[in-house]
Image (cartoon, rainbow, N blue to C red):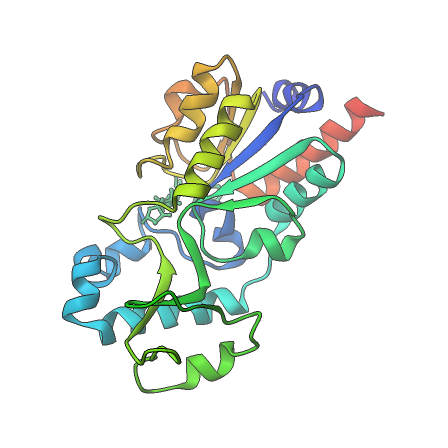
Length: 251
Ligand code: APR
């Protein structure tokens, strides 16, 4: 099985990766669904919708600050690092991710399409103010602040620049992701339950255009029915082995 996947990757002309929370699980970032997932402990309607933010911005910010703290302490794992190496080798053309944890960037990937936003970006709920807290060097100060964050331009509430349930995905990112999926001859799907749309369309688009799907996951999910190769196991372990085999084939 893993040999088959390695062969597909080694001869791919336009490999893309589509990732979900499972790729960051080994970095200590909790996933959403399944046992121990965030949606077991928190209710989506209370922390991850525009209505929730209008009703109780404090609770929503507590949730996102808690996640920012976790993500800030997390380091890219072998699966992220493997994707960075595959891009350096010229094989991987882009990473399309549903994750907001910034770990693909920290691993060194260059072409990253974030479909669901980024935990370190905040934006005004009223005007066009937007800030990347990592770039402005304000992460720690922001996390320590007890008051609700206000926009420095118009004083309205800042919100996380992430996509909540009921909101549209960023247009530019989504159309770029769909274009990449159309072009791609192999899509490597890592650590997603494939239950949240429109993101989950990505591998389906590649498949429809004649591309192959390789899935890496500890469990089967929404993408598995169209996977040409399903590799069961932890993303870090599987990706390390897969890269070794790809390198052997390209020697
Ligand atoms: N290695 C590989 N896969 C793993 C690992 C691991 N170590 N640990 C967990 N998984 C798999 C699970 O089996 C599951 O299929 O990762 C997947 C995580 O699924 P979800 O928690 O549903 O995460 P994701 O698919 O990214 O969710 C999509 O839902 O709540 C929203 O906006 C949120 O972007 C998120 C979207």
